[in-house]
Amino acid sequence: MSGPWIPIGCGWLILLLSLNVHAVQSLGETEPRIEIGRGVSVQAPDCTQVKKLNPGATSGMYMIKPAGVKKPFKVYCEMRPDGGWTVFQRRTGGAVSFKRNWNEYKVGFGDLQRDHWLGLQKLWAITRVRGSCWVLRVELCDFEGGSAFAEYKDFKLGGERQAYRLTVGEYNGTAGDAIRGIDPVHGAFPGIDQNGYGFSTLDRDNDGCSPCIFGDIATNDCSREEGEGGWWYSRCGLASLHGDWHPARDNKGWASGLHWLTWRGPATYSARATGMMRKAGRRLIPDDPCTPRECRISACR
Image (cartoon, rainbow, N blue to C red; front, side):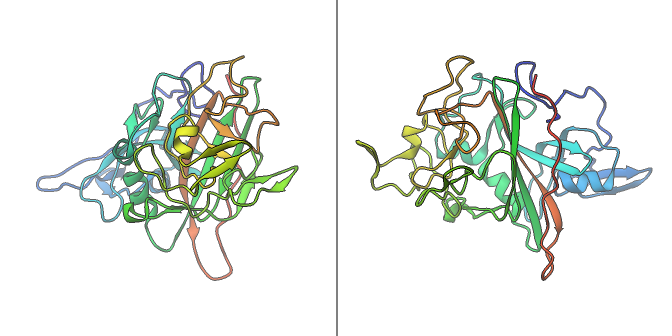
């Protein structure tokens, strides 16, 4: 992975270069514009467009304004050879708690240049443009120097009335398809596919448990069982990156944690660092869906 992870995290070096692309405003103008040359500027709806308009743009903070949004907002753009990725989740330690209520997950929290959650409303605004194919990328680092990734094409969210329902398409990667609950060894686990489920928090339960029975344990609330973090739970599922962060040598066997259970097992394993990002693929045309491009993950540090 590349980008500004803090030293104990993995990947993502902090680039201390000046940003080549920045928002400017003229008199009476409220929309951000990205300068691509002397006297030439355009609106930037996301990090993918920033990279297209300025191929030399470096990773860092940018002001964007997706279509239909009244006010621009800041995001962290991860600029890679395959395009500009909008980072919407990063975890490298326990400094930022992910035990948050619905409104906090809706508006976002944390430091955009470090550990953070961008916010469901902003993420929905970025991905709701029709006719585009959005790629979701999840990056994971363990405590043993390893890393893995999962990519999904056709990534999108529903609006708040749909509880920001998650939709993903075809999977590609090395971490396994935890969102659908497809284990690379044991195959699909019935009833735990998170695709198509709304987002749940401690104060707003949209999971598929009423109750769920795990051995001799019954639960009605996946968020409470998974470290009180918000996620797109089903029954409850194999993916959950918003539980408690556990340090080295104390990160196995926890019900809470940063879980991607198709990746490390059989014991429950909590990751050292995670990142979630999205970028635009090609325009969708009949019989020509966009395909995620594999991007090499740099060594975890």
